[in-house]
Image (cartoon, rainbow, N blue to C red; front, side, top):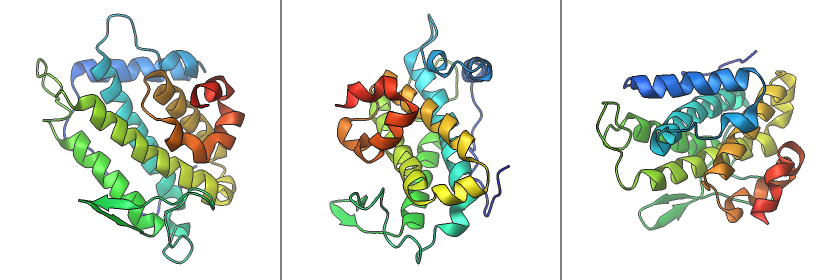
Length: 211
């Protein structure tokens, strides 16, 4: 059971009927334990719609998981945003890079994703309105930032996750995330390096694609 320490972000705009239908398709497929099949683009469906639905779902998943351990992720416990001892993530503002405590960095990541999802110029919610040309680049950035949230949780807060009995949910969520990202080439080799030990255990079928 998830324990929450703060307010969950909510998307302001509604989804289209198509997006709702695709989300129901995903949940139905996941419900029978077919994660590998759940990531595949359904025949005849639009790729951008499929990407949009999953951006929303993974945003909800990652922020819920992080929120459950947020009280343990403080400026004192995690003074720098890292994924293990060898990888530090720095926040970019303009041309400047800044070291931030993990909680500030992750909140900036989640705020960024929410802003993109709420922006109808990026994620249209009106039938017939096309996605922008830059849409898939935005999706790649969303997945890059959400991956870093998962990485920090796994490599710095797994004890808290285990104590809350959330490890099965975290594993299932990350497996779905990495299978989807791999299917649509949303993460590069450099990005996934800190988590290869976890990917090796949970999703060995995709490991060779990042070598």
